[in-house]
Length: 300
Image 1 (cartoon, rainbow, N blue to C red):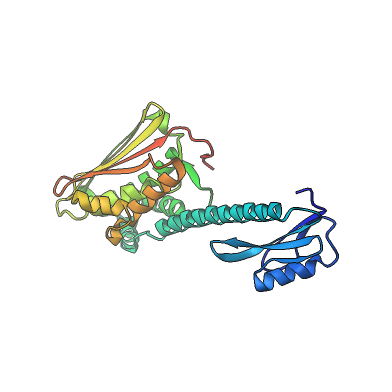
Image 2 (cartoon, helix red, strand yellow):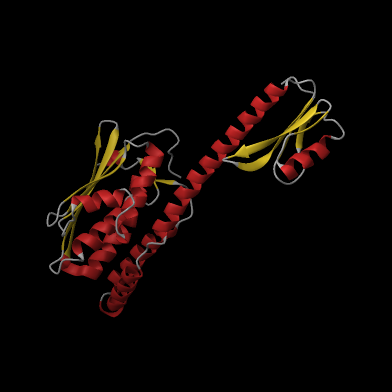
């Protein structure tokens, strides 16, 4: 702007100045903040900043600067503020979805797991000790407050701990098969991207059948992508229900699928996310496809 001074101020607090402002510029800043209108005196002009129709602060310009140029600068600052708010909202939404997943730990499963562990304390103390360690790993991973990303290997450790507990609770009703190619274990992915999907397969695919069922988990490299499949032979669901779940309009027990799908799309782009293959009486197959390498996605 080739101005003598430029100032930015929010709705409260002192303005931040670059250059040497007019001694009475602060008065104009207060005036513009109070009434939400342009304030000017001499070669100083203060322009209100609007973000989505709401006041967000003011831009002050001191010096022989064309008013049109000052207005354009104010528009640019307002656009930058709006982008910042949108980015902050997206981050807050992602954090809220992750908190929702962490809060989804089933009290019913925890109770059954602890009861099962207790039943082994006298009869098989070694197994009880192993199950306690599995339970600790499951809880640690579910409520961890560290980085945004982990490795597939780290997520699988939590999955294996969960499956060990589930097998102890369900006994012969649960059959598990896991096949993971070593080359995809270092792949970084969002925290709690896989564990909720496996839990969903056990709870909705196996526990709902009196005779139990099987859960298969596989992971392999396909070119530049890592493809993970979680499959169960449970009751399945209507494909329209599955479509509604991914759209966020399904029943409440589909929250885990919805949250994981949204976080994958937010991190990797709309071409990624979950694909659900299912039909009533035909089980459910959930496919997760993520890039093996993605800039900015680094496991902590």
